[in-house]
Length: 269
Image 1 (spheres, rainbow, N blue to C red):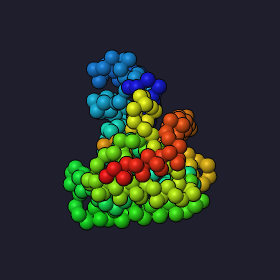
Image 2 (image 1 turned 135 degrees about the vertical axis):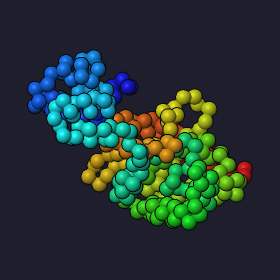
Image 3 (image 1 turned 30 degrees about the vertical axis):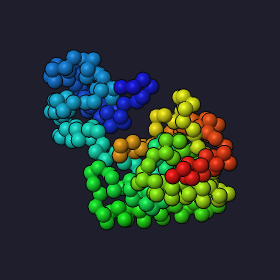
Image 4 (image 1 turned 45 degrees about the vertical axis):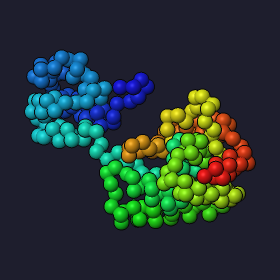
């Protein structure tokens, strides 16, 4: 387990339940360990949630403590979540956000993509996406982009140079995509900056992320990688992402210089 990380709450809750049932049945930790053929320290780690309670311990504890199946029933909740997507929660938060800070490493941010660019990405997904789902996905993204027209919402985007040079869909699609960036960037509530390549290490090398500020001042940090998504509201971690984005903005080209950079790339296509 990574340093400074906490075990899953399901482990801690289940471990606490084992301890409570054991105490209620007047069964010592030593007795439970001997019956389950574990050493005492292993059982202690499971009860404290530092290790995942095993099926064997749950079955033995359930029988020894007379839990009538309540401890055994916990087993399925100790497995990793099958659905790692926090995207629906993110979309809901984005829909009411008053500030959106987005950094992209290899792709154009979804809120700035043209329909052709989005279609190219979705068409190349593995597993393949049915055509009707591609079209509905494009329509949904276009609907999300409507928020760009709300001048009470502030949008800041930092885009790594690699995303601007990747020939997603070929020169024609990319030329239209770069033109779209220049058009959207003319809005007074949308700021687009380019982070040029060749400057060595920068704080976004770990991947793309988005930081949202909600209408009540609440903040969220969102990341996505290989279909697994994370939405975080914990103060210290979100603050770190806010600071990371601030560093990226300082390392990026200014707004006007970024516009010239994008325009030059577009002319070369």
